[in-house]
Image 1 (cartoon, rainbow, N blue to C red):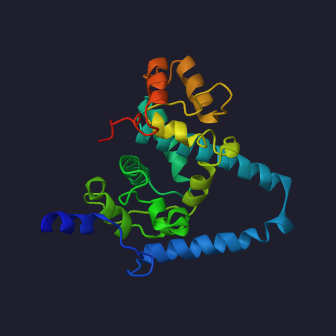
Image 2: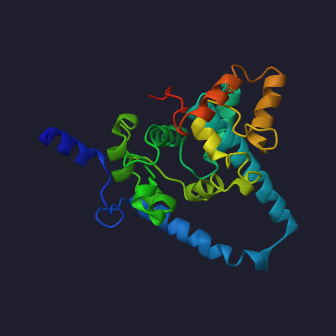
Image 3: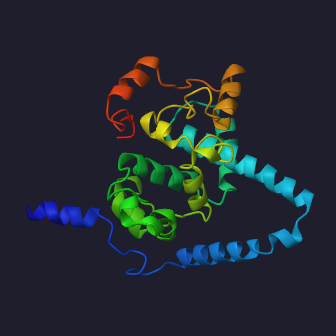
Length: 250
């Protein structure tokens, strides 16, 4: 009984990790950078140019669509499809420009999240409150992730959190923002069929990430593209919401 309590204490996140820990230099840098970016955004309307706007849109598509949605998330985290190595590396390189950390850290954190969604072992668990799950979690790169899912971070002494991660977390749960999130906003579908390369399961669910993957499959570049079968969808509809989640990450 004592062992169980000790193990539980080790694996669960502390109630106030944001205040009751020693901050690393990297975490201080991320916090300062995050604050400066948001302060500078106040002046953006006064410095607006269309050239800068379209550059921002292009970078958003390159880093967000090709880098995070297609590479980090659907390809590397869930292995929803395969790409030639040169293209896999190219898309992953695009993801590094999204300011969300390196692929290994991103994938490890995301797999840990799927293993323990909405529990004490979820790296950004809602059980810790709104501000923790929305913002505070990514400012603690070691205490939270390494203690919550240490099996994913063996020999990882210096993990990183990108300052735009919280933005994607919001975009991924508001359905009407599916266009801006490239299809990631259909998040209930994703947790039901996490192996699927297509997150917008219904025809009317806009999913730009899937359209790109479908095109790559059509021209023979993307292979082994996974989608849920009709029988799987029907079976899940009769089960509890989370019972259809793939166990492939375990």
